[in-house]
Image 1 (cartoon, rainbow, N blue to C red):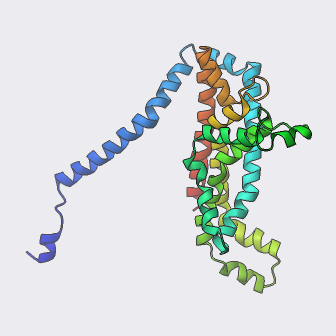
Image 2 (spheres, helix red, strand yellow; image 1 turned 180 degrees about the horizontal axis):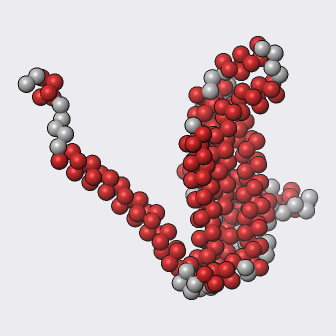
Image 3 (cartoon, rainbow, N blue to C red; image 1 turned 90 degrees about the vertical axis):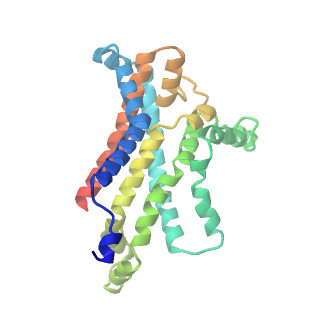
Length: 277
């Protein structure tokens, strides 16, 4: 028997059982953290039947909360789609003083509690905050109004577009753009026909994650918006108030819709990207 054969690990039942055990642990971990809560949500939503879900979702306050949530989420998508792409491009393509600090600040929303974010916005834009008197003199209200909700959502969704685009930009070297320029292509033609096709799936996936995160934001918008019914009551805040008032079917139904929308967003983009590749 050769030395290589002696060193080779046995490919027997032990290896197969070890692999199955590892897969089983992974499934159990995912089931505990994801499948079980989703199953509980489904059971709660359908406890009184499909008709109760439809009736709950048709309430005017539910529709208003969904409308406000969608408006805020779309603003976050547009803003990060433009400025997040610019930040990602600058961080990858340029070297400048303070770049490391800027790169670190991008991840701050991952580390700071959403409730703390809302409180910080109150300290800046509240009535007695840093900019409160100035805003009041201009008759501009940020805290306990929609602008505060938008700022809070922009903060918590900041990293997604940037972190999705940066690896794609790093993999896409400048050589292709330079080649297009030497062939007489304008900057717009180079971007549209060379740069964007190479970055499009990072861009789309970043938008999808931004939208999903914006739809589910709760802590920051609750603190800075106050959860004022008819004014700053987003879908997640409606769930919070509904649970407090023991309107369980309404809370479960709205949570189910938000969860399904986010799940469809993330999975559909991932499936399409895999098929295109």
